[in-house]
Amino acid sequence: VKAHRNTDYRLGWYVIIGTIPICVLGLLFTDEIRSGARNLWVVATALVAFSAVIAAAEHLGPQSRHLERLNWRDALVVGSAQTLALVPGVSRSGATISAGLFLGLDRELAARFGFLLAIPAVFASGLFSLPDAFHPVREGMSATGPQLLVATLIAFVVGLAAVAWFLRFLVRHSMYWFVGYRVAAGLSVLGMLALGAVAAR
Image 1 (cartoon, rainbow, N blue to C red):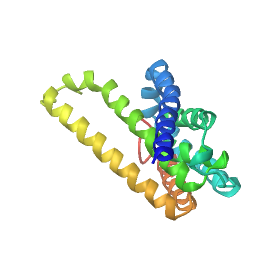
Image 2 (cartoon, rainbow, N blue to C red; image 1 turned 120 degrees about the vertical axis):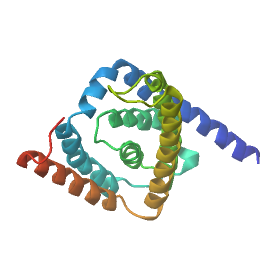
Image 3 (tube, helix red, strand yellow; image 1 turned 135 degrees about the vertical axis):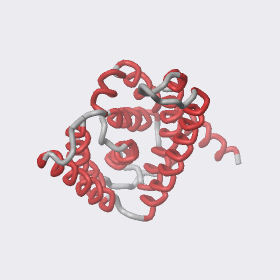
């Protein structure tokens, strides 16, 4: 029991350490992040390009290290990888799991740690956007601040549920399914942009 508590204690600290990079960069580059999120060229290109990183991690990662061998350096590296998710089109889960696999973590540990890192990051993102919830998003919008606040909370819960399901899926399956989905989605959007079927912004 004591060993289990010590492991949970260490894991808690590793989550704190791993959360620091995305909090710092998220605050420093807020405007750039929001600008990129409005550009479909950025999103689609990131979908395709980062798929190569995910595929490489799945193919090259030894997946030989378990929870007892996780250390603070791993937490910092995986947490730093999570900052890539600030680029629209880069998957938060894909970034953290890929980093974990490159470090040699087994897929289950990489997925679990990635999910734990997502909780404070998504929560902090929601808190950061709360001030906007008390102002109309666009002219003519009649939604009140409390209504938007409820919508934000629902989005937070649904987002975490989706991440949890996705990570459970990855424990049982390889990342190649995810790679195929990302490439197909990215190429579809790029094709529509090239044909002028959709606007980039």
